[in-house]
Image (cartoon, rainbow, N blue to C red):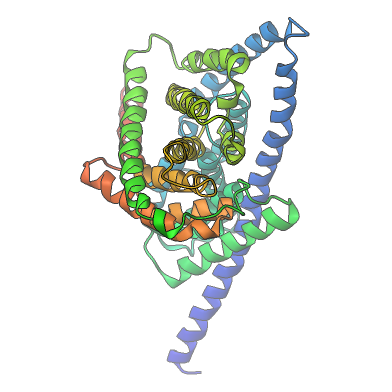
Amino acid sequence: MDDRHHKRWTRWANRGLLALEGILTGAACAFVICLFRLSRDKAAPLIASWLGSFREHWWIAPLWLLMLIAAARFLGFLVRKVPLISGSGIPQTELIVRGRLHITRGEWLRILPAKFVGCLVSTLGGLSLGREGPCIQMGAATAALLTGLWDRFWFSGHIHIAAGAAAGMTAAFGSPVAGLLFVFEEMKSRFTWGGFIAVGCAVASAEMVTRFLFGFGLVFPFADMQAPGLAELWLLPVMGVLMGAAGVLYNKALLGTKNFEAAHTPLSQNWRILPPMLIAFALAFVCPAVLGGGEELAGSLIRFAGEPSAALRTLLLLACLKTAFSLLSYTGNVPGGILMPMLCIGALLGALCGQALLYAGIIGESSWQSFIIYGMAGFFVSMVRVPLTGIALVTEMSGALSCLPGAFVVAFIAAWTANALCCPPVYDSLRAAIVISRKKQETSAKRP
């Protein structure tokens, strides 16, 4: 065999090995993430039912308060010991994929269990945080540990980390296409056929494990949702502009709240998560609907009914409470994501627009629900600035294929609006803050 044929067979053999490693990586990541989802999904209804009986058992409220105080102290200790688990984990993972943040195998061994337990405690405690960003980081950690066991680094430019992150996103959302697009659109991974094969096989195996082994399906029950008629399509560009502007406002509010708390809190890291936990305690007995990431709240909007003016007031109150509580929940370096609260807020804003248009007689009864989808897509894309990923994500989570063309219009106009307002994507700002913090830690560690 001449040298040319030898190189060709070697290249195909390497790609076959990449595919096998991608399959194993995706399956392992999905297994970890699905265990996390099962733990949360089993425990959350039990806690909600227990808290709902507080009127019959007075001792439930003080006992829950003590548990939340203990949880806040535990989370503060966990973040102090493993700082890289703070926040969603997506900015940290992106920095690693881009080669700007270097993590040792020992750090990965600490990150995976700490993120698993920390995010579980924070979300079960009621904080308005998502599981999706943490699942991406846990997927990346699982992939990194597997690569270390194999002692192979065939994936150029940390693409093995990207494959694990994509598998984590697939298992968290049930969205393989969005997981694949996320790697190349948001993480800006350099496209190579080897990397594409690895990531593609990882998301495919993660989807199979998530759907067929663990039985997870659609996150939102929106598969039968109807798109607006031709006479109502002119509203979609308007919706894109509104969601683009709303995303910019939330982006600035999120970063402003986080930076203000970090600069002015009198509490040490051990207790910085206590204030949002105390707010979660109060909301658990006043308005429990806004607790948690918001999957249940967003999913229930499709059944929203009632007298139009009362419906508008209720939606406005829920949107304000969910937005304010989500901003406060992300302070204190708490481990938890912003994607699901972001989608929930977008769904609330979309439902509010749809109900307002229905109340004004501009759209019909069968069309207002589709604005929930457009609100989620537009708000998400305005914040993150990844239109293809956002469209695929919302469509795969909801199954609302009839709304797909309108989601394209809303998403791209929302991205254009956010860019026109000169607001950087939220993860760009969070990545910059992590780099600065990491440099400060390294500088202080070098001082005698």
